[in-house]
Length: 145
Image 1: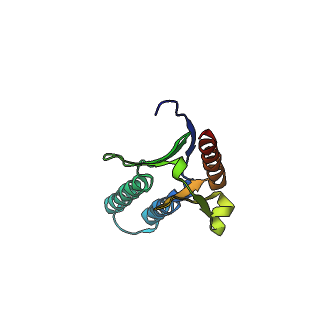
Image 2 (image 1 turned 180 degrees about the vertical axis):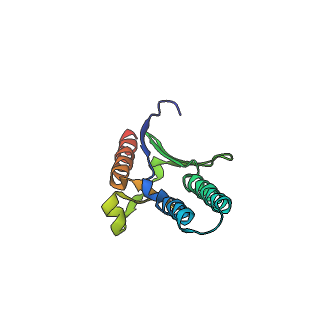
Image 3 (image 1 turned 45 degrees about the vertical axis):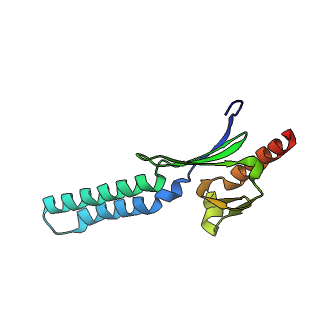
């Protein structure tokens, strides 16, 4: 939109890749521990790594959470792209949820509520900072009226 600027782009926390990394490391361990033939172990490890790589790509899925001066934009998809836009002037509330591990490692979920829907943004790095920026922009939009 004209006169609109990007204020904040929320990033995924690297914790979303924890389990794919664990499985990839277990596959390497299986390679050295197993008594199967070298070729069979190699094929198995490469197959697991390919599956883990595809899993990691789909976890991220090309997702972007962007806050502008007027909207909150959610985009997802690598090949097929889907975009959802939420006008800040329609936002009514923001809620943050963090588990114990989320508090320890600095990630959480941010819920943005409008009159009819609640939008959830998971595994956000620094969710409090994202929430604060959203609130600031909501105040700015409401002050401009």
